Image 1 (cartoon, helix red, strand yellow):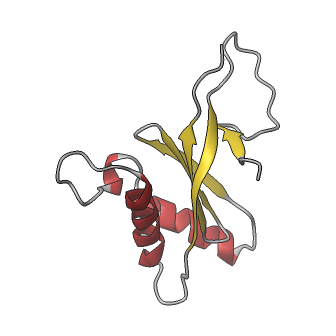
Image 2 (cartoon, rainbow, N blue to C red):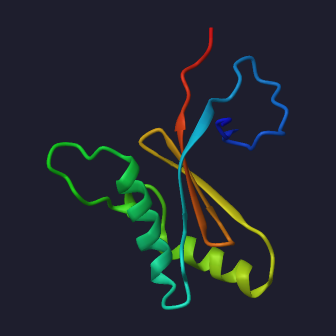
Length: 116
């Protein structure tokens, strides 16, 4: 089975910088049911991340506020649903690329080693 990969800008963007952007491999995917509450989005993102990340020491929680504004994330996803438009929000947490899509999907990618 092929590994799904992406870059920060997606897989089809050309880059003119001397060093190519990092590539990421998909390590987790989660679909979130937002029927009960929009706060499920933030909870789902945190759950998906804690399944992938190895917490430092005895840490068992993750504060999303350190990386992205959860309220703004929810508003963007909710607004795109009401306007029936597709939106994708990308941000990084501890070198992992987190992609939250308006179809209530969270994708988590880990960085691939740079090829020489």
